[in-house]
Image: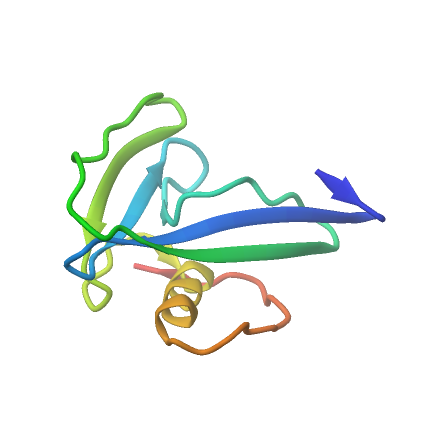
Length: 113
């Protein structure tokens, strides 16, 4: 989606009642773990991350399209899976910090292995 010449992206940091974070593993590119969300295209962009809490346990997540997402699971914030970019880890940390909105320029990603 494009608004006034800027690309828009959105993702959600979703936590369960036990504090774990829902992550998905891409079936393309570097096959990394990510928070659920949309694709960000190259160029100037605004990226929004929303925090959501599940108040009670829900059914285990499942993969609907294995070419897009190869795995999905719940992870403790201190024990996140790899490979993951520092961008993703930072979005999780920011969302869980309890601080209000965080604005920052996004630098090139560093892969955590």
